[in-house]
Amino acid sequence: MPSPSQASHDYPSLQGRVVIVTGGNRGLGREMALALVAHGANVTVTSQTGGESLAETARQAEALGAGEILALQGNVADWDDCRWVMDQTLARFGAVHSLINNAGRGMRLISETFNTVSTKFWEADVAAWKEIIDVNINGTFMMARAVTPHLVSRGFGKIINISTSDITMTRQGYTPYGPSKTAIEAASAAWSVELADTGVSVNVLLPGGATDTDLLPPGPDKKGADGNLLDPAIMRAPALWLCADQSNDYTGRRLIARQWKNNIDPTQAAQGTFVSPGVLGGV
Image (cartoon, rainbow, N blue to C red; front, side, top):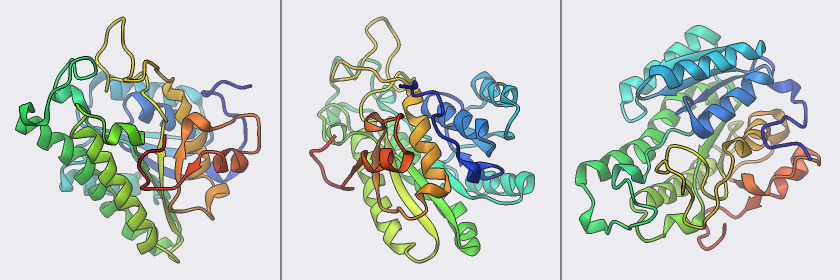
C-alpha cells in the first residue's frame, strides 16, 4: 500500500486550480499544500509569523516543478489580513477555487505540559485562551468570509475546515482548543446548508488522532493522549480529493484521514472515512 505521503491517484481537475491553505508553513498545512502543488494546483500558503518555516514550504513547493506557490505572512485573526490574502491570491492567480482553513493555535499556549499535566480551565491564562479562540474560531470564519463571496459568484468552490477528534473536543485539560473545534464543526454544518445550491461545498477534515506537529510539546516522549502519533502526511490524500472534482457532490461531510485507504478508488476511500458531523462520541 502506498504511504500516506504518496499520491495514489491522479486528479486532472487540480491542474491550475487555486487553493488557499492557511497555516501552510508547517505540519498538516505544509503536507496538504505540497500535495496540491505536486498535482498542479496553484497554492497560497499563509503563516502568522512568516520566517524560515514559511520560506521552507515555498522552497519545497518550487522544487516540485508543478503548480505555483505564493507564500504570505498573514494573521487569520485579523480581518484586514484575511482580505489582503484573498486580494493577493486573486492578483497572482486570477481566481480562488478552494480554501483549507488549517491555521490554528493549540494548548501549548496554555501549558507546555498540557498533554501530561492538565491545566484546569480556571487556571488558564486569559490572554492565551482568547488567542486560541480568536485564531481557531474567528480566523476560520474570517477567512471563509473573505473567500466565500468570490466562490458564490463563480458558482463553484470548496471550503475545507480542519478539525480534531470528538474525544479531544470534550477531553479535560484540552480547553479551549477542543471546544474551539466543536464550534468549527457546528459552523461547518450550518454553512453547508446556507450554501446549498450555490455550487460551494463545506466539509470537515480531521486526522483522527494526534499528529507529529508543533501543536504537541517536543521531546522524546512526544505523543498524543492516546499514546499514538500520526504522520502529518496522512492528510494529503483526503485533501486532494476534497479539492478535486471527484468531491463535487459532497457537502456537509466529516472525513477522518486515518480511515482513508490508498489502494482503492478515492471516492470509495472518502466514503469509508465519513462520519456524521456534529456527533460527539465518535472518532
